[in-house]
Length: 352
Image (cartoon, rainbow, N blue to C red; front, side):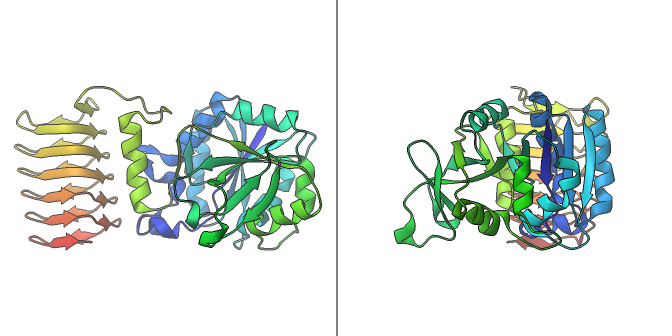
């Protein structure tokens, strides 16, 4: 069976980090985000994966390597111009044609979908399209999906007004398509599958069903949700690729942490990291490869990418620090996102 991952977006809500790197390659607990999606597919025996790409397409050569290492066959479907979710699916038609249904995934979702159950449901209902759904406490900012008692989709409500919120089920970003669905999408045109294709198919009387996912689900589309994804994995709220431990410090063997370092929570350290004396780590802290943390630093509930230098006496709280950032001594950074290759002068104070 095949799957299509839609990864052609600009990732604007995750700027500044997506200015230099596609969101699929952003690290989650020091592992590229896309690896978690690949792992879910691998678990369910889906070994042919099409990547719908556009923005920073050259970077996806790295993703090819990640997929091959995980035993997957990866195909790239490149968009010369942005085509939207529907257009991206149509653009990948040459890889997806056949007699069997296929999965489609939004590229910014971290979830532990049971793909076997979703596929079996799709086949039992003899559905044209099955849309994975989740229940949310506040559906006002999402597109709603209204179903009957048999889970057949009856209506889509985009950007609902308060009086239109008649359900708490929303699109979870996973679909099963019959191959004939591709015939319903126009070629070489920017089109939204959610706002245009799905309602059009529903108007034609095609059988569309919704399957509710009750497990872990997160749209990793903002800085806050990105931090949450990292911390949820550390907490064991989702078990996928990263394996939670009860150790206060998880580090690679070639990293050096001074014996005087204090950890009140969880510290995860990748390869070739140095942490100086008397530094304190609180909450959850993740540090990427080849980073240097000086003396007497306080770092709390933050994510540090690769090749970062943090000078002595710095305080960093509730922040994400991008790749190759140089922070001189005596700086304070709180509730902030510092983009790749930034230089922060000594005694700087950055608060969002």
